[in-house]
Image 1 (cartoon, rainbow, N blue to C red):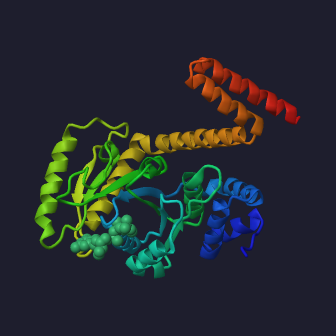
Image 2 (cartoon, rainbow, N blue to C red; image 1 turned 45 degrees about the vertical axis):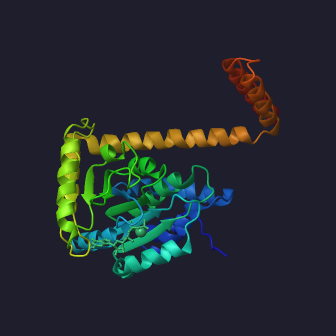
Image 3 (cartoon, helix red, strand yellow; image 1 turned 45 degrees about the horizontal axis):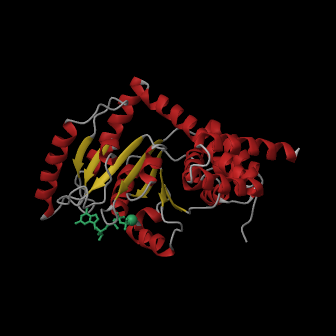
Length: 333
Ligand SMILES: Nc1nc2c(ncn2[C@@H]2O[C@H](COP(=O)(O)OP(=O)(O)OP(=O)(O)O)[C@@H](O)[C@H]2O)c(=O)[nH]1
Ligand SMILES: [Mg+2]
């Protein structure tokens, strides 16, 4: 049985940097219970003034590229600089399996035990807005709890990279040397979206291949489009085993934040992300509300048939659907 508190109590705990309370608050924002959602939204509104003071880093890459191992090495490095690091892991498959959590606990063995690190796998949740919305709220909670670096990790398959890109300041793509983009299951556009590409496992026999891969990507990206951040994608290599190159990744992120804070991009990007978040959420609410009316679902089915058989124009059918929705709402009053 999950104990629930009022929003005030969660707020107090989080501002005191109580990690147990932070974990409980994340469970709360992931909950689909309407009563929990009410407390969660009060809590987020309370905490907004204490959020925003972090660097949000998205990390993606195919299974086995070395995300967990990299995060362990990178996290420790950043903590050694006096920072506190929160790691939120998004599993795009519907459920976080116990296996993957346990696997990460062993791969992030030292971080798990470090008081300056907080690791939390996101469950898909059933809440409106899904994983993306939960993760955005979890980022805010971690910031209010005083974490300076927030890492959002996702496996680079499926739709999740784009939604992660839209909730972070810096987007890092981990790549294997010696395997083409297609082989790695990396979709078109992802490479261009990244603020840095990092070739992993650049150690031992693999080091030369990593350098070759770096040169190839540097060349390919040279012809890429200019980003609105005015930042050109950096290509790096590292080894999480030897720690070679880990500091370069950190320095690159520091350069990025300095540059984009000076240009103003850092804050306008966050403003736009907030507005896009609201628009996303509104779409979710609207389509969910729409689905609640059984009569409209029936009408929807019959209109689809008519449209398919060219008995009715799609535009007219859409208007009929909207009108029926308006009527259904009126009948509620
Ligand atoms: N040589 C070498 N091996 C590494 C390095 N980083 C990770 N590995 C190995 O690569 C394998 C996969 O590493 P993980 O960190 O689990 O990869 P991941 O991307 O988190 O994988 P998923 O969680 O399955 O998506 C493990 O066997 C690691 O030991 C590295 O820097 N050098
Ligand atoms: Mg992993």
